[in-house]
Image (tube, rainbow, N blue to C red; front, side, top):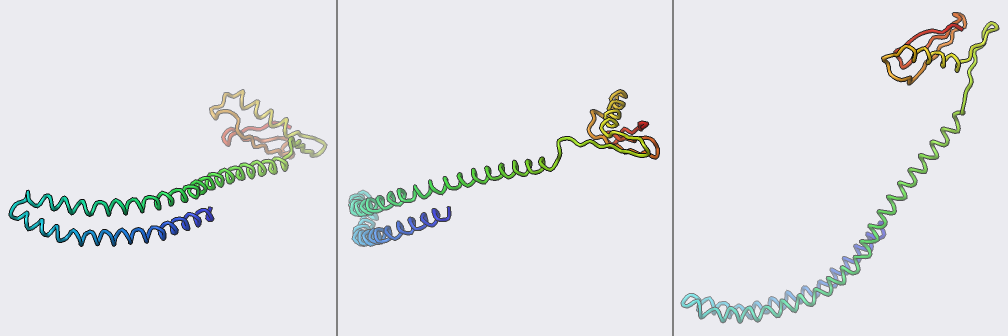
Amino acid sequence: MANNLEKGKEVVEEVIKKAEPVVEEAKKKAGAAKKKAEPVIKEAKKKASSARKKAEPAIEEAKKKVEPVIEEAKKKVEPVIEEAKKKAEPVIKGTAAAKKTTRKAAATAGKKATKAAKAAAEALIPDKVNIFVQYQGKEADAQELAAKAKQIYLEQDSPFGPVGTINLYIKPEDNAAYYVINDNFTGSISL
């Protein structure tokens, strides 16, 4: 993209350089025409003081002398301007396309990175974990205890909404499992 901007600057500078002599020539011709027209205009102003209608033809004559010079300058400058536009157009289009391509590439790379991170995280988490607590010849299955706690919660018609989280604390020395559901509902289950 920076390369396109540099090319654009170069094209503009080239056009300015090409236009300078034409503009200078137009200024000189306009200055010369103005000098030629000045005596006529002065004469016209003098005549206007006595009779404005007599001065109008002289003013029109001065305008007619200046207009061709201005038109000639315009004709010489217009092709240079058109050339500059044509040369700058691909650079401008290229810059816009480069911006669009860069945005798409960044978005694609971001999506791929997100997918890769999710896949890596999922690979670290097993599909199923079975937790058993064994103490003095007894065994407790954490999944079964969590299911019992959830069943008790749902039977109570709790005002705390659907089950979001279940925190389960198994204490073999008490021969009990204690639970907290949604950080509000508590209870215990005998092992």
